[in-house]
Length: 257
Image 1 (tube, helix red, strand yellow):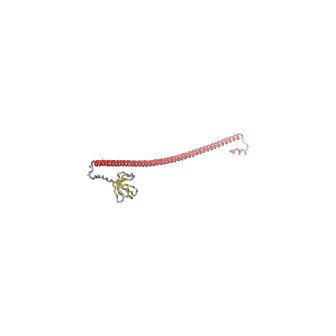
Image 2 (cartoon, one colour; image 1 turned 90 degrees about the vertical axis):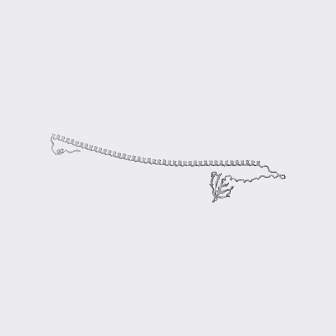
Image 3 (cartoon, one colour; image 1 turned 135 degrees about the vertical axis):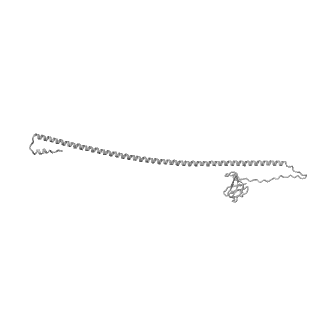
């Protein structure tokens, strides 16, 4: 900025001054110009310093803001990670509980299957044992019947032999002078004993009950063991008499010995 020198303004209205005054005036102007430049430089330096400080302050504020923003983002990220971790842990815990529940259910189901299998096996073993015992009883009864039959046949044969011996020892018939009478041997009629039809079980030592049922000892049955005491249902058809076949209301047939 140009500053007007007041002395210069006055000097235009005055007569010329001596050379020394002019010289002093010029030096004074130089000093003022130098002072003005100094002030200008100081103002420029102060402005530059102020701009620098302002810029540094703005940069510092920006850095602080960025640091704060980065910290908030980091905290937010950590919070998100912690939340995700918690959700993952909950998910894993739920999955673990689910797997444990499935395993427990499967274990329980397997235990039931094992128990059912063991029960079925035990029932089968009991059934086989009962069947085996039934077969053994049937075989024993069959042996007894066969032994009785053989003993009866043996007794019959022995009886026949004894009878034949007695017959051979009998005295000869007496002859008369005029007529000779030869006595005919008496034949004893033996009624044939009826036997049960094929496939029809027999009842021995039977008795009639008041409800028209029959109680007795059964043999030849596929449902009962020989020698077992049973009681039938009410008789529907047939005469309750030895040697007859009767039919119950349920359709079962029995031969009465």
